[in-house]
Image 1 (cartoon, rainbow, N blue to C red):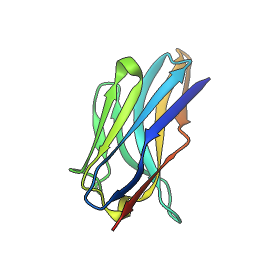
Image 2 (cartoon, one colour):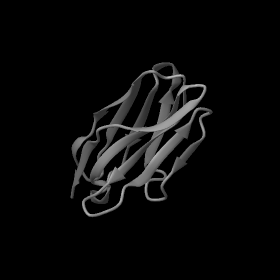
Image 3 (tube, rainbow, N blue to C red):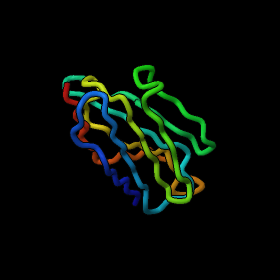
Image 4 (cartoon, rainbow, N blue to C red):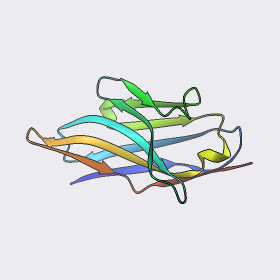
Length: 120
């Protein structure tokens, strides 16, 4: 079994900052990539940022220059630093991990989600 436990999030005024973290635990052989997605009410879930095991990062255009994703491989943890937040960043943020629990099994896992609310 694999668990992703998220922390962080909350309420902040526009222009403020928040940070999220997500720790993976359980039967982990290798984490291939970790990332953050978000889903606003009435909208589809979308990729916010992702980081591979090698450190390559990918960001949604809407957050480039404002959000930074980082990863601590030793702790199986991914972080998302969110600066210059805008009301349109309001959403439930989900941690995602593409990981292998053995040499022969690779799956996608999701955290429970954490609410980020940006007031104008």
